[in-house]
Image 1 (cartoon, rainbow, N blue to C red):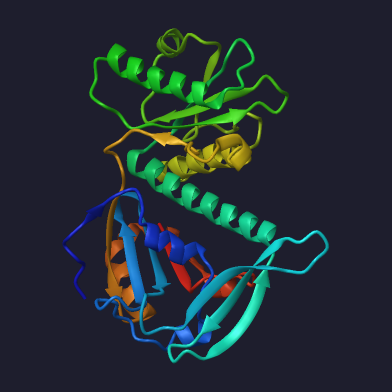
Image 2: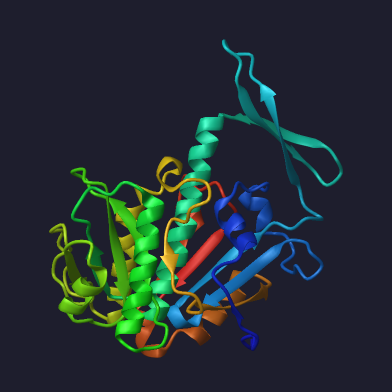
Length: 322
């Protein structure tokens, strides 16, 4: 089997994200027996690889035709004080109602938010690894700073000035603000790939103290959590991503981020390169993984399969990292 030659650079595929995180309209046992070609807009197995960050995934994508569909609408549940619940009906391709269920709106909102956070974390991890981001600069404010939009503007200006001071071309970065656990408002975790003189960062930031952690070599995280040694540089880049997202996700709730704000910001034009195509089954996907993974990295290959997750409610997914 030949790998596709056409690469698709981008910061993620909304359809793929929905398929990986959303509710499936098929039972897993029926999905495994379906056809695996989606060139006609139907459903099938889609294999995606990100060679630059050593990852691949296989997911059953539910297409717009030829499959059972889930229809949903809002209905009053009759409880005291009213209130709306999402009512979902699974309908066969012949129009037969197969099943019905209700979903509490608060639980549904929480589920969608968890899925959105998961997609943000996955996209961030690939960006980190592709661009080898390992140095986290914590940018603080002397005085309490609670205006998140203002903070994001300050950091955007910091990135522009840092590039100017270094007389360099655009460089990759990732940053997200974090609420200080003891009060005092926001501070910012700003990740880059190269070590920059401490005095320069402090001068360019100018709003307060700064300090740095190298996640590829540091034995402990800034908060004192033990990290241990990284067997490969790539482990350090992934570690940096996990840390950045872990301490940012708690502040990614709607009341903190807002409807029009971003969870995090990145430098443009540094997105991972994605290659994807349709395969017939999992065996085809495994054959592609063997072609992608270098021999000296096969012992580090890690596989996750949704069939091993008891609470998985989405379509079948299998991922590989090496």
